Length: 181
Image (tube, rainbow, N blue to C red; front, side):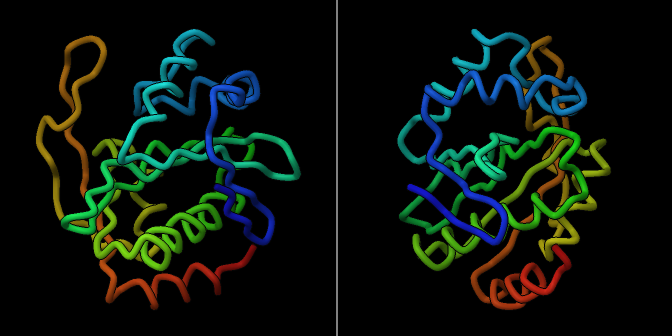
């Protein structure tokens, strides 16, 4: 599957993307608030975990360069819900519009192609930069999921929960399209 935007292409993630993803994921700031791969071997396991049923993972390309990754996961066709998550970009692309454009492509897929009704976004409570970014998309903050995420060291992290519903999608879509590139 390929999703084509104004400047980005989202391409279905495969194990063959690992080397390029590893280059894009080199900066440790990317995974400051999320467990991320610390070696190429861990990245291969991260990609393998994404290649499962109920998940649509993508690499994000800018002019044929892999700059990050995103996915729809926990797709529940019965309740027509999913989570949009595991989105990350090399820091040089933060605050450049690539997140907004990738979200436009992913949400269009979710609401218009897959016919979903609800898309959730979750982020570590302390990750203020990502929380603000999600609010700028037009998502609604619903609350905090206490101790929702188990970290590799055994600690638990609270996650802020956001969502976009099908009736809200037209205004969110317009907001994302109107935003400067």
